[in-house]
Image 1: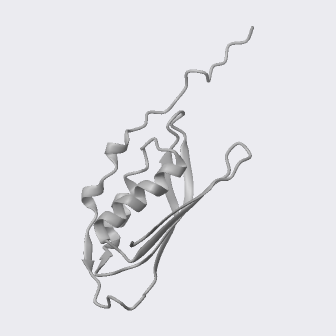
Image 2 (image 1 turned 90 degrees about the horizontal axis):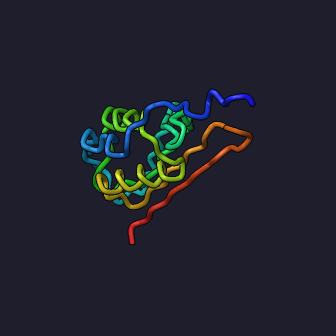
Image 3 (image 1 turned 60 degrees about the horizontal axis):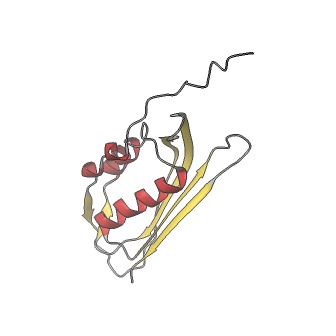
Length: 133
């Protein structure tokens, strides 16, 4: 009988409390009511599989219509980088990003999309949306 040398192999991951929400900053938007759509995109979003610790890579798109605030981009980069070693399901990551950014900005609307690289023959695309009631 052959022993599976990978059965107990995993990489260390951090819990969701390692996501650095405190680094996020909002800056004033001088054109409220203008229906301006803001889109940020990065092909370098990375988080970890909560079971194996292996990295999940995604193209992440953040789209929103601001009200009075924009997210400061350097703070957004640091925030997104804090996911790098966090074990989080792909579907949960988009919802967590949406929740954190809506809490910070109180936008008119926001959509977070993540298209993850294929793994095991399955490609995942997860989308979370929020609209002001």
